[in-house]
Image (cartoon, rainbow, N blue to C red; front, top):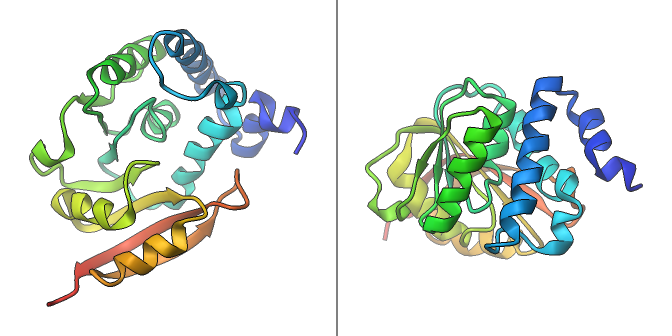
Amino acid sequence: MSNSNRGREGFDKLFNVSRETLARLDIYAEELARWNEKINLVSRNSLAEVWHRHFADSAQLLALASETAGLWADFGSGAGFPGLVVAAMQPDREVVLVESDQRKAAFLMNAAHKMGVAPRVESQRIESLAPLNAQVISARALAPLTKLLEFAAVHRVSNTICLFPKGVQAESELSVAQSHWHIELDQVSSLTDPAATILKIRDFSRVEA
């Protein structure tokens, strides 16, 4: 893939977003670079390809939740992927970013303010949160699938979709999780990494002992 296809132009071609959305993401990229000098949000190598490695990688989840309205909860948001990208692309949607690291939470609030979007930032551990009743739950590079399902079980409703991007370890994580959970899912190939997959989980329940 050429450098242009991995940058801002490539993102625009892939997702065909409005000028306002691109402007919000421009601000996001600027704030991310500025704050990354103070706190470790993303690696320097990935920062150089932020439009592909982070923005596009996050934005592709929206198509998988296209028929699901309502609250989007992003666990372990970190630098805001995918949750703050979702807020940038769907500014009218209710989004909750859960990030226990106070410095990263401060970044999320600052970046969101400058972008002109208003996700709710919960700066506490997922285990401490009251049930969110989220229609979509996402988590990127946070925890193994078994743990993610434990988190999601507390915060879902009857028709919640869980979207969990995974790398080469996806099959092994799924195998372990299926010993604890009955899982209805689709495995969707990532648009940004041929070795990665997105687990779109439509339903899950505990395996009875």
